[in-house]
Length: 372
Image 1: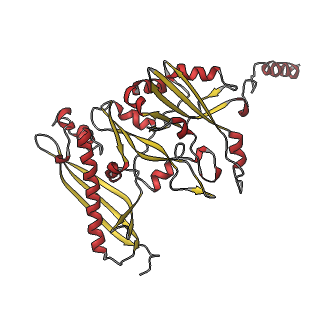
Image 2: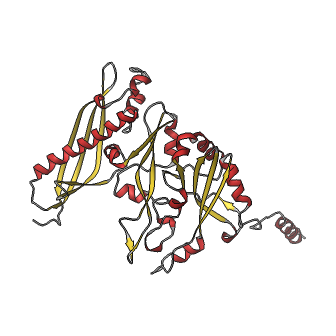
Image 3: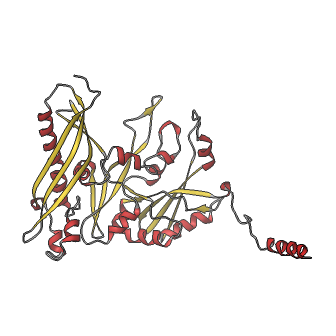
């Protein structure tokens, strides 16, 4: 009798188990991998980029790639960002799913006029994660979203989706995730830089066919929630000496006859007292010599290298003064640790003259494979 009662109890519980009846198969949804947002004539233009995940799965471990993965692009307008996306959702052959969005690409108009709307949209959408990459562009968003990768690999292997390797191994401008951006957006000092992308067909080709790839050309600068303008990569050369993420920085000297790689530079910002804060900047690093065509002495290379780093820091400081924004975020240390000594207006009055001293110390090691 006990066995019969046990069987009845177990059988009755089965009816309350839902199992996977509501689960959706991978091919039954459209997986959005990137969003593009623009603003013009009082309307938002939303773009979606979706990839064929089945195609990506087939390429795992493949020895050769026969054809490029297709990229699906959607486009719609609306009075709000969500209204534009809703129009795409209503006309989609398969439901749109935003849980796999890795990057958001913003137009300059949007960054300039509607950044608040972007922040509200991301905050209200439960499927959009805060660890997405944030980019901007002055060019056609649709072109950037259809940029090519090498060897017909899917778009997930482009800088839009995978900038981490580039920033770690060849640092030249910070590419930050949205959580880093939003954590400092409301801060009354310092700047946020949204890296800008544009298409490039100059440097790479496959079988004599030019590759159309997206590259970083500069950044859109925001300070105290205000858009300060676009700055090209050449004027941001000093940023790399103040980044914790820079691990390997290649530099050329003496008309590119000498090449070195700077490894993990360490920076120190010393705040100096006065009627307004001033600063001593210290950069220390090891460098590996990988090319020296004319056998220039190590001492001469060292001195020239230290001069070049100083020039790069000053170049970015000059641009900071021009656009009235602290591109190097030097004032952040004063704001965090010395707020009792100066008010925010004094801290923000940083310019080229605020830098009292720049000290650069580089130790050069010759590559063991280098032959005289």
